[in-house]
Image (cartoon, rainbow, N blue to C red; front, side):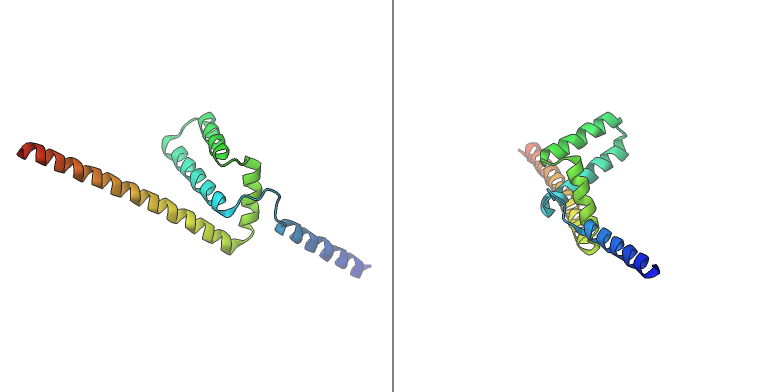
Length: 128
């Protein structure tokens, strides 16, 4: 009897592990998923810095999901699935961080160039 219960417990445990690894229907493709992670992180940063009311945050979250043509439930299932694969998830997160960093650096470069152009224009105006 003890052997049977151990075997039953092992079977249930293994079946449970397999069901968690099963690819969900409508899995969001990785690139789209990374883009969603980025936008949701930007929303989180905005929320922490500006402290908007919850209805504004909810509206913005809905806009993000609509932009990528996914539901919040679809994102949550995909996120849960992707998190089960730790090494690959770390790569996705690092890619998202790198994209955010490059975007930020690009914006800073753009601002610096605008300032330089503005200063050159003022300088030319004064000397002509």
